[in-house]
Amino acid sequence: MWPINVIRKRSRDRRFKAALVVLLGQYTVDRLPPEQRARVEAEMDADFNRTDTPAVAARRCLGWADLAASRATAMERAGIEPVVAGLSWSELLRPWRFSRNVPAIVPFTPQWYGRAGALMNDFHVMGAATIGAKQFLRANGIDVPDADPSPTR
Image (cartoon, rainbow, N blue to C red; front, side):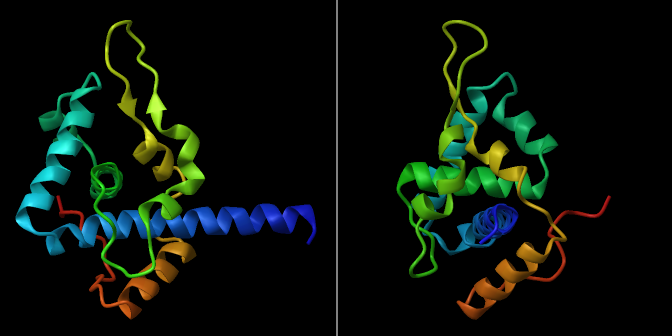
């Protein structure tokens, strides 16, 4: 393959995996048992609290896709696998493996987990990869609506 085709294929794969991660983070958390769901939310809050924005404020100001990506990375850290057979978080999040820990800006403050933010650079709500990811998840028994779940303002 020509180098430009290799770059295009990698870009398509990254966008497809980003869409899968965001959609799985959004639509599979309801399928988890209550104790696992609470563990995911606690892991998200702990990560948000490591930044300069408290978890309560971060949940209010982030969009649905950002929160879904954070949920997915929290599930990966908590050891909860995706509900679709044959998928693993480690494989889905492999393209963003180098953005695990963001170093602390201020000395003696904890590092925070920046993988969800890096992943959002490759997620496009109306992209072809997102449409393909929705079709893949529907084929595997996850009800994904056509419209995004953001509230109307």
